[in-house]
Image 1 (cartoon, rainbow, N blue to C red):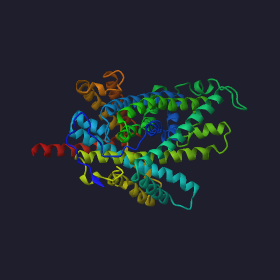
Image 2: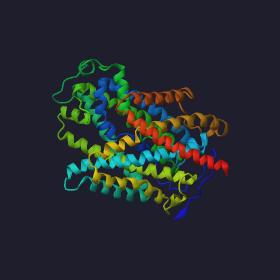
Image 3: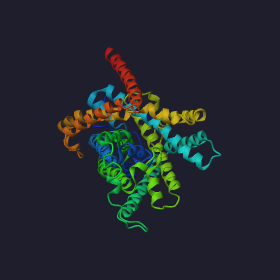
Image 4: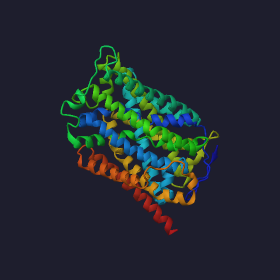
Length: 464
């Protein structure tokens, strides 16, 4: 065991990481592809279809484009300056210590809450399969298993995520193939579907553009998780090259998976048949006569939840480790194993997951909803700071190290500004929506609290 030395205010050129370099290119590529394919797509998309109808295709196109722009910005900075803290380090270099502190702790808070939510969701499915084990017991089992996985060598995390993501990607690809064959009437006992479901039941936009925007609000957070691949890149053998390749391969394919599967769903089935909270993928598979479609999708969702739990535990531990490196978190979290694993950071990040065991024991039905409301719109605030950081750092990189710009943001600076405007618009629209408003208010309160702490720390530093 050894202690990593915390770095002072980071220069543009990153220093060597004390962590392991056990992740391979295939791990990063599959993490980039599978990182956002989760329960939000397989189950949550039903709520979006219910409010937007076939227009949900445009909702996913808009939300996915925003996520792609953010990922491209993040990829540009991470390829030029790979670091385990990724965008927290970038924000510090671009805007100062307060920004690195704020975005790092906000993202850590988001991930530790979400991993507990994912454990709860997976536990509900497992409890349905094995009722003899209570929901809180399953949460405890998942926490123990994935804590042990993340305390071991980083390659274990990489292998888990590779196969989890491969299953999710394979499920999406198979769904797209079956759906396309059904649409053109190439499956047994099927005729070409035509445009009936796309243009019937009120037309392609039955709720108008207002419905499309409501759909964006319902689905935009399903794209959260892309950021972890840039954190993981720092633990690969060639971070700059590997993160650039992972970002390039991920962004277009993810948009294809999301938009393509939504187009298949609303083409095959009337949008009015969708029920929020129930998987539209199950409805399509049932309509195609796939045996045990519900159980098949339950397995896929179960794997997706465990995959996200694993990835978020990894991402949160590396983020808090990076904060400790820069003196923004307790130095005790810098303890690294002989294999290059920040074990204390892992334990600190999984602590809330074990707390969620108690929450599930006392409030098994309501804890899921309250946890989700607690993190609300934090992801949008994180994305906003990523965009502002990229605006500032791009010019600096061009002056000081132009050779490191191996991956460039499209249409700089105009598309960065457009992404920022879109994030602001989403937040304003959420404030006008009765269902989304509590999330914005809770997230704003959390962000304000973190910014206040950052300001106090900055003021004390200046007085010394």
